[in-house]
Image (cartoon, helix red, strand yellow):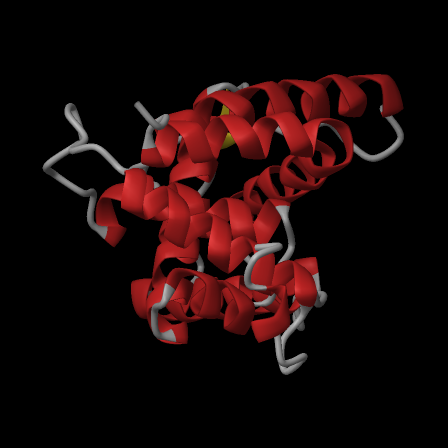
Length: 216
């Protein structure tokens, strides 16, 4: 990066430029990975069934229990990130932990923005699924909406997460299943933010090493 500093023209964020150099350098050092999952779960496999139990979250006001849930969520997300397929993992780390924009992640990875979105959205659902398995469950009625409506709401939720914006619908307008799904997505997002605050330098170093391999 220092050798190429004179080539930086100032059209992009300096951090983005440095990360791009880091990723490209690591890719040149990348060894053939072994043990990468050959089967990537479909969207249907990542979403709960209409008949599944849903996470049972504490009621508002139970602060201590809420804090326990959040700590457990952070622990679960730490482990789940390590299990993500490599191309999902790096996109998620850059977007939701380092907090680059979708355009910046696309620039760093040399991908189209639509591809970055797909990878980040899928990674979030994988984290949500892992997190959901760690939470207590309760019975819930069938969805109030058709499956297509639920998927459209999920897409809107993911877009809101991409922008760092609030979801445009009030909780009362969602069925209990959509609320539970979105709450686990929010817990995973909050856990990623905590990782950024607490352990970003070491975590990012570890993930890059796992992603691309150490130089030999």
